[in-house]
Length: 267
Image 1 (cartoon, rainbow, N blue to C red):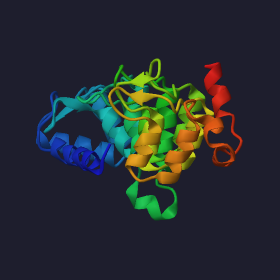
Image 2: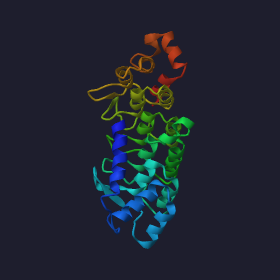
Image 3: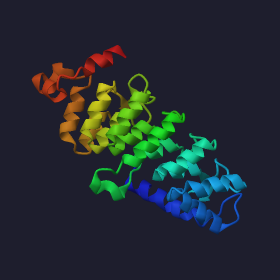
Image 4: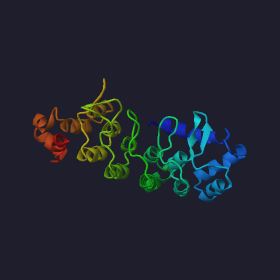
């Protein structure tokens, strides 16, 4: 979830090209396949399927990925939309996981095109990748005690993807149970990064601000820990433990009259 993870994944992609690939002729073929995926050359990928040199569920070994990274995960990471369509049409597993149990939908929900940051379109292609995968049946959740696509999108501050995943039915509290969780909820992920619009979106959708990581923090405490003081107060106001009764008009002003507590009591 950090810059280190993002850089590690990029380095892994580079290393893929020099480690060989089962069922292919050699490093040169592997280089060409990787380049085709990254450059969104679906023609080459489809040709490789037809000649039998590549399977839609091909996994390419790389340092850090001894069991291989699925082509569809790599395509999702870089939002190669044409290659994604080709892989899906050819029957690729839309839930194929990396060795650390990240799905293609998680990767598309997290990453973005850094070259487009100044244009305001950095998330555009990845949002389309998210929609492609979801419409193809990608799982909106993850294994128990693992991060979800919604948690990744919330951490990254990708409001459109957060809203889309919620509309598709993603669980805003992930697998939190009776006020506790083993892994950060989407609300906690947004709080860590200080994404107030995402926090409000999640609260409106029923995210529970009272959930606490076992032996750890609530979303409000995470926000305070990372120096998002105003957001910490908003989240504390959204907790049943305090609520508008604890802070009166100040909380009502922060919450903007939004009926978060009523949503909680009905769940």
